[in-house]
Structure formats: structure tokens, C-alpha cells
Length: 437
Image (cartoon, rainbow, N blue to C red; front, side, top):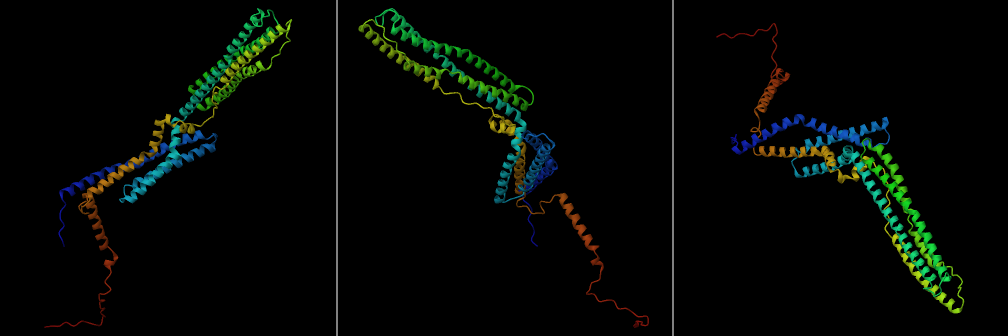
């Protein structure tokens, strides 16, 4: 029998290192399962809160469904990570580890899909809904201000109309003084100028009547917006506030539509088109052909000026109508889970916490895998008997003694061998003679 060489100093240090790590793992195993269970239960509780926010009915069946789902999530998380905590550190081949890494990645995605987003909804659901309300208020405010801006631009056409009206009034005064046709008085040319001046004056008055309506609508819209802003930050359940917020949003949407209809730009455009097209020419009242010819020439010049002023007014109205309208704003009620997904960029810490509580055991799996690898590396090259601890050696000796005792006390040891000759029976009448010397 060949004599075994003793361990080298390096191998002895490696064995001691491996035994130290095994001692730490033995101590950590005493509470690792409990810690994993606590994490799974905590995730299940937050999952229950997230599921409850998605259910419209608050009856017993909905509560039971939410509890069943959260329990299933807790059990699934506990079993999944328990498998990996035991199996992943034990495998040694690269292929097996890659396969388990793929399974861990797939399982992590499943956990995020069934639990983490609901945990995030429980952690930041109300804040996400409030964020949605605040974003909606900003959209409505932009729509109201843009619509009011367009309405004010349309009201600004009143100055253009007043300028054209004033020009025709000035021409009529000049005609009355005889500066246009050369005929002083209120003849045919004067009546044409006064006719168009009266039309523009009526249009100007009609535009002026819209100004108070526009101002009142804008003030009412700001009051509604102020109430909507207050609803986004008021204490209390966000669901109840969302109901009133929806009512205010409907009111504001109707007011924005009414403010859009108060724009007088289409009215001014039609009036400008009619200004030059509908001219009632009076009968020339000159006393001789020369005077009537002068009146006709003046009226023709007035009509040309009228067409130019009407075209300018029409372009101004078209410019107002060409202004980009406000984008349509519609408030859509949203659940807390959907709000967390929609505004995820604003709730990164909540998302991180929700995912971490589910995927934290992955770090433990990697730690165990690294530690087990270090233990195997420390024992590499050492014989089995060199890696036994004193307690293991004592247990092995006790086991050997138990086996020996069991073999000695076995009934097979008490029975005679089948190959041994059976003892001869002596009858009472037979006596064995004794040889004497």
C-alpha cells in the first residue's frame, strides 16, 4: 500500500478557508428562509393594495380575489427564489449556470409583470393620479389661454373696422364740402360713402358687444381652473377628488368651446366680402351731364377704394382665422396602476423600491454562488480525509462502531454455518470405550 503524501501548506490554508466559509453559511442558513418569507409576504401585501385599486367593486368577492392573487404572488416569489438559492450555487458547469441565469431572468420579468408594477401602484398610485390631474390642468389652461388669445385677436379687428369706417366718414365730409366730385352737398357720392360708413359702424358695434362676453368667459374659465388646481392637492382620497375634477373638466371644455364660438373673425370676413359686393348706387343728381359725369367718376373711384379697404379687412380676418387653434383637451379618468406606468419617469424611487423588494433575493443567489465557488476552490487538491473536521471524524467513528455492533448482534452471527457437520447424537445404550495404556 502506497504511502499518502501529507497536505501542503497552501492546501491546508485552502481547507481552513473553506471551513470558515462553510461555518458562515451554516449560520446564515438559520434565518435566510425566514428573511425570504418576510420579503415575499411584504411584496404580497403591496400587491394586494395595488390589486384593490384596480377593482371597481368593493364587495367580499373582490376582496377575496385580491387576497388570492397576493397570496399566489407571495408563494410564487418564495418558491422561485428558494429554488435558485439552493440550485444555482450547487451547479458547476458553465452550461448549467447559463441555463439557470436565463431562468432567473425570465422569472424576474414574470415577477415584475405580476407584482412589481402593482407594488409601485400601492407606493405611489395616489401621487401618480394627482400628477395626472396636474398635467390635465396644464393642458386645459393652455387651451383656455390659446382660445382667449385668438378671441382677443378677433376683437382687435374692431380697430381695423373703425379705421375703415372713419376713412369713409372723412371722405363723405370731403364730398359734402365739394372736395371730391366738385359738387358741394349731400349728393349721390355722399350717400354711397355714408351707406358704407353705416354698415361698418353696425359691424363695429356688433364686435364691441362680444368683448364683455369674451372677458366673462375667460374669467369663469380661470375660476374653474383654480378649483381644478385645488382638487389636485386637497387632502383625502384621490378617487373622490377625481369625480369632482371630472365635472369641472366638462364645464371647462364647454366654456372653451363657447369662447371659440365668440370669435368675430368669420363675421368680419363675411362683412368685408359684402362690403364691396353689395353697393346700392343712387341716382346721379347732377343738374347737367358734366356734373353727372363727375359724380359717376367719383363713385367709380370710391368703389375702387372700397374694394381695396374690403380686401385689407378680409385679409386681417383671415389671418386671425389662420391662427393655430388650441389643442383639444379631454380629461380621461385613470387608475393608480395606469398612472404609475404613464408617469413612471416621475416616480423612479417608487419603481426602484417596488422592483427591489421582489428582486433583492437575486443578489443573495449571486453571493451564495460566489461563496460556494470559493469553498470548492479552497478544497481543490485536498483528499477527502483531509477535509474532515473533528466533529465529522467523531461522527464517522461513531457510525463505524454502530455498524460493527449491528453486525455482531445480527441473528446471522448466531446461526451455525450450513457447511459445518451436524453433531452426532449418542444413544443411551452406547458407551464410548476408553483406551487404556
